Length: 184
Image 1 (spheres, rainbow, N blue to C red):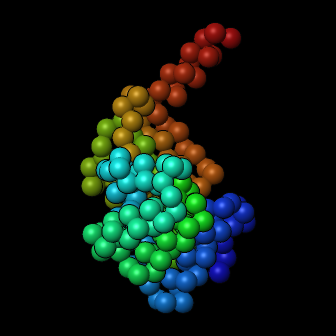
Image 2 (cartoon, helix red, strand yellow):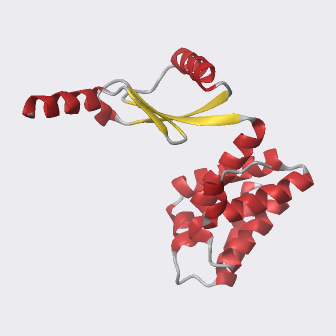
């Protein structure tokens, strides 16, 4: 398995790499990836769940017990439940968002995919997303998975981030560049 050294060097990357190895051996990478997406959504939607993962006053046993309950309600796989228990026991639940991102990156790399984070001033239509995906796939030479978000402060245009590369075609950046040029 070819995992970038940057991912493996981070604490979250080591946990994600171990989880990926276990999921690969069990043939459940897709299920675990789906579980982690549910968890990520839960962290964003539930302040209580987010607090559970970041509050140092909650004991290891209490956090583990609470996560078992949450896992059962969410319908998470046994491997994911056990992994959350390990994070709770090692007091690493605060790293869960980074672990999820690292796992997603490892799984995508194994599939030969790359994720492009697309930020736009307004929500893009399905046709625009399909066109952008086609162009980015041709540019990168491998399958591109789009992750979108809206930031009205861009005013217009797009900011596309693929790994360490950034393509900034936002109106805000163009206006800032013009403003800097006029000051000189």
